[in-house]
Length: 293
Image 1 (tube, rainbow, N blue to C red):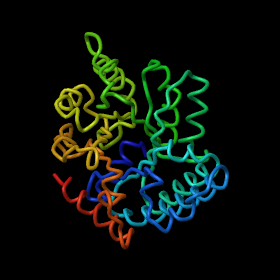
Image 2 (cartoon, rainbow, N blue to C red; image 1 turned 120 degrees about the vertical axis):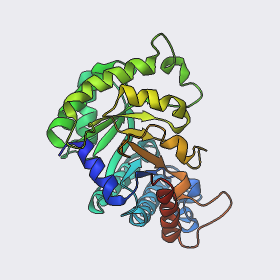
Image 3 (cartoon, rainbow, N blue to C red; image 1 turned 90 degrees about the vertical axis):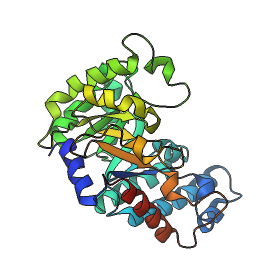
């Protein structure tokens, strides 16, 4: 089954287009987990922090299973802890799959063909260490940096989400540059690349990252990429609302996968969850309910 269809089935099964980001901010972990690495340095710190992250991910994944369609681990948080962090990432990806959650590796890779092939093998190949279902990619070295991933999309049901319109302060430097603008050119190229990977749902394995704060552009991007899944960050702690997140939704109610990390994983600043599993699930359920069309 192509990834576009797999994601459509996951969204329908969950009853919501919610994706929960796994962003393990060490300072936001529950106090009993923070105590394990407090005061440590070097390899000792990384080892204990890696184990704490793996445990936190496990409770978070069990909390959102059946509520979210997918999870999106941000690889930088794990890479910062060296091999213990990568071990935690592998464990978390495996557990997510066991719980029926699709895994989108937020890696934002983008490099020449031979390196891109190695990234694909490491992150989304079914025999790779992560075996993620999809990956985020940067197209700004050129579309040839995307093509090495498409074979795995075609042959193994994997997917890609390519950075089209992000809303960080410096994004306009390239994305809004030129005429037509950079984001418009990338969107047109992705529509062409994804045309051969459209499944029975009418959705493609080639998707786009379109931030919630780009909602005024989302409809035009949808017209350019009618078959693309939009991965929509910026909801919750980053300030984006539900209406903005769903601005690019298709008439059939599909097409937008809405990501929230801190808004689901962590309580408001200065507070602690007495029961993290219950609290995470309640926040996930509340956001999922708000995303129903």
